[in-house]
Image (cartoon, rainbow, N blue to C red; front, side, top):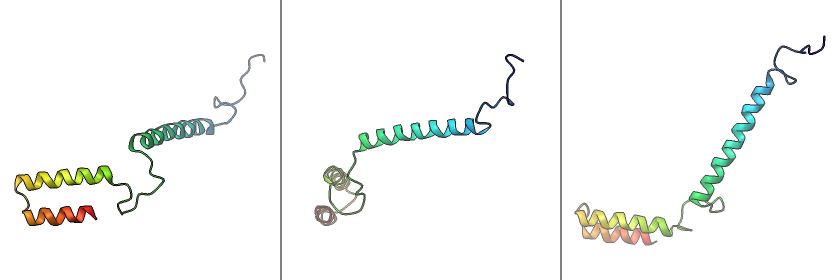
Length: 89
């Protein structure tokens, strides 16, 4: 009688203990990944819509691509000027 085990090998929570353990660790991993993403990409206060609110780096990159296309001869001077004007708005 001493040392007799009560239950079927599932512990106190039955079969749900394993499920809750997986859920717990999944949430921990998700929180870590979300935190790393926010720190690496920067958090802009939830504003992901259009407009040119904080597009400094994006605008610079777009202009580099535009200049490269013009230098390769993919677009004409008129197209380059119009696209550059569109980007600055």
